[in-house]
Image 1 (cartoon, rainbow, N blue to C red):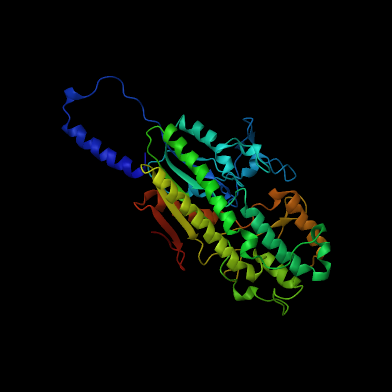
Image 2: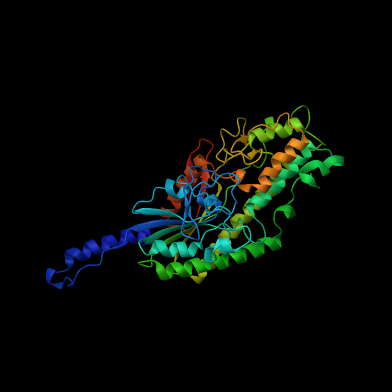
Length: 418
């Protein structure tokens, strides 16, 4: 039951208890209410990617998978990266007895009703709805946090981030005549454009795909929830990067990112966590806004189809204002998102500086991310501090009477949900 309806019902029952004569009390043993639960479903921005301290994850065979080593297949269930520091566990949720994180980094709409293990590049976990049904057997589900849409059959956040970062690194370390040396083949060195991230047609397809998946979720919730009362919060996405980089990151060694080869600047931005062309930032912002429109549209469509359901859109696109990577000097230490970090092979040791590396070194290091994606998959996600902020956003969304709210960070760090 939603927190609001639970409070209203408690008040009504209290009045009824005073007015009802003892003789009219119903006979027979009372059925014990199930303990209440909040559940997280969706992808990496919900699972806790970037927040660390990842918990073992039960795979499709019922085996709890702990850390399998850096060279293990990325399909291992552990790499769902479910963190106890995720926003679900940071939120203040009065009346909630237990919390269950069923989200999985890399999760797609397909994974809601289908086992991720059965799709290309999926992880070895069961369908999230199957996991949800198991929770409903022992708990009354009162709150569901859903983060879905940034990964789908048309595009994924990870591939978008990798594409734009790779172009910047290739541009920084190799001349246009030697791009063949990077990653064993041609790699574009131009800044990302809107079409490189997601076209209008792709957004349309992703919206339809996500709507269908969440429709299945709402239908299932109405069937399995103990009292049929639950709030579903549709959270969208924060951009880890600002609208423009702080001026200390514009040039280095008298070179900016519009000329050919700028290794010192490339190393500086990598160290700060933002290896990206400045010209790629505006398309990236529009991509984030497009994801927000996608999530809002899904909520609006399904609110019309499920008029009795308690559905809230949570806009977190401004939750990291003033604290994005390279938004001010001192990045990444003052940012709420994780920097891009690579390993030189599956070593477990992150490369924090690219100074002094030549293009063949860069090729080797970048290849580790491609071959062992788990070595770099935390990049450009909310950090543990970022998830604490998102937890405060969820606190507001769980208590609001509105159907859509925005979570905004003020310059002094104050978080407001309205």
